[in-house]
Length: 460
Figure (cartoon, rainbow, N blue to C red):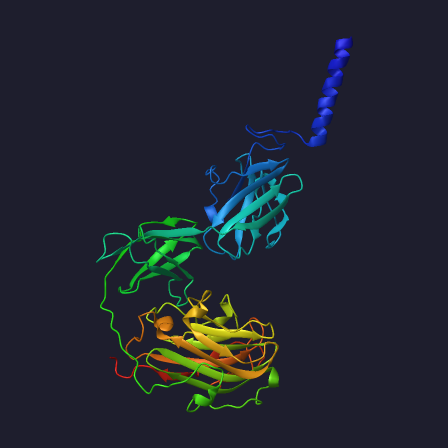
């Protein structure tokens, strides 16, 4: 009698637990969490509604009643349609009669497997998206996980050099059809190898360049789903580098912060006509050259504002410079430039922080490289805390062109513009030469008027 009573009690407890937790309670092989189903699949229009493709649609039970699956989309999706299907059988599936649900909502158990799918979206970017579904609450959610990032690698050979160390080459990469470079990497001088990493999906163009060699270009390199493209190799051919020497008229000035030894300004302007008054205004701009150097001088007034000189030198490295100063890592300001008139060098300082002006080479749309002050000369007489004064600077051609002392590219010329600007990502009220849009409003301003100094007149 005692044994029969214990048996009845055990059966009662089992039935009670089953009723409390749902019936039946299944723990699939290899799982430790509770669920009512042997399996769950995510099936939709993005995989052809193929319920038989179990390996590529099965969801993972990650906690009690909670299922997940991550799906890769190679492009943004305005909307997607899908169902959650249990036990590999359309008769136990979950959708909704609701319209577009965004990226979360509640599903419904479809009677006999019939009824509407779930319509969700948009999926705003290519990459991996996680689908979550709770079989108890029927709540589902879709969230972005990560964008896959691919790689491109290869080796650069030099037709006239088979023994390391090799020349260092620059590999600049673009989205095909876009003229703005995404970045650049340098090749290894011992192997010639290069690698470009962290690439989003897209079709890429590479430009290979090295001083003294003809550029080469490779197009149509496709990155999708984080793949790696290897073996993008090129051989660069040597070229005969043509030099020229600067031509007169030469100037003779001392870099001393006094413009009395300049014959005349390149452009005349006066302090006092800026909308920002003494807080930011430019007077005369002086530009000249001799057989070894470029000279620039400018009198200006500023207080808690930036003074900037942009220089377009037409360097042999045609891949340097930027058309958008607003993305630079140093003194980013809301100034744009035309193609062929990229800003390649920048002289800048913030008047009021106690730091002197500096000269940097603009390598690309984001990166500037500091030039050691031992390579150029300058004097700045504007007080550190603000006021009026003169900046005078001497920049050797070796800094601008890197072709040797006293030599420049044939028909070399240098374009210069001086500006007052506000804080980061702002424009300013004044430029010399005057450019339309210098209104101090912060809006993007296209610099289309420069002063041009002709360095070489005859190409020799």
